[in-house]
Length: 145
Length: 245
Image (cartoon, each protein chain N blue to C red):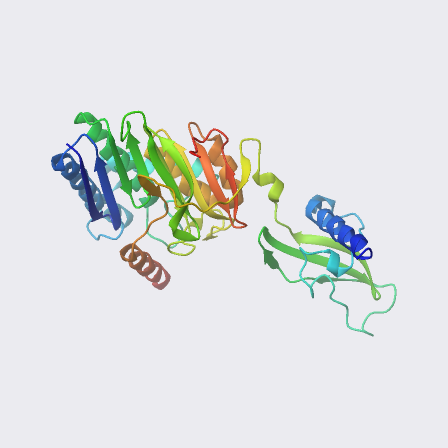
């Protein structure tokens, strides 16, 4: 149990580092945390290894990760390998708005509630099957044009 | 001297709750919205909007009402940085997002001009209210829970005002972000409370199209208070929103 605590801390630190990472910082050399500390990065992209034997040691080579969409947007990294070592990671795509930006100066954050309150009327995006069919048809028409 | 009536118009269920009115005033609302549907529907071959879109009438021949609606569309396109667009590439001109709010607000104005002071119109989830349903009490307007059509996630108490919600839970992700041409994402539900429904509806639609930047943007629009649910099921709202316990 005690050994788990440093791992959790490392995970949290790794996540914060990745989250606060700005594309403008991408020219700096950064060390890539081990994959399990970076929840925003999909496995198989940042950790992609170059084909063994194709690179002579000391020669830098870049590999683009796949573009992965998480709940905040698209994340795509570019990894620079020198031989078998990762020497640089830059973000090709990064969501420009994190959770902290949502709660701007004018808004407060709350948890979502579900109530069965007594109300006179309800506001919502109520649509009918009729409008759905019309919308679908218009999309089909637009595609055919 | 009180009546509740529902009619299917503009492809939407429209309910009219008149606490100091009669069927005659309810019919006035329905007649007006039927007229709007004939004139502004992009799905009708002979509507003014379709004729303009197909070049069968010129921009200088359109009615003052359509000119007003198109000016509103342009205003919200500019304010939202292009996230809201009435004319998307490869698609028909569709000013519906603005038309509905504007038309229902106009219906409320007609009721007021006829002397009514206590009423509520709900047009497919967009709400405009006047006065109080009973003495000393505001209209209690629920905000639909994004995952459950039978429940609400908040209740606001309003008198003279309007509440509009833009969301993707009914027809899937049908609102397009005009900046990318792709379906808007980031929000499950975007609700705006404003003094009038024209403002509330257009602001809610534009903010939903903007995605995660929408709530903060909407809260900066004059007279607007917001309640937003993001795709992570977190609520962001204006602290001044008149939420009932």
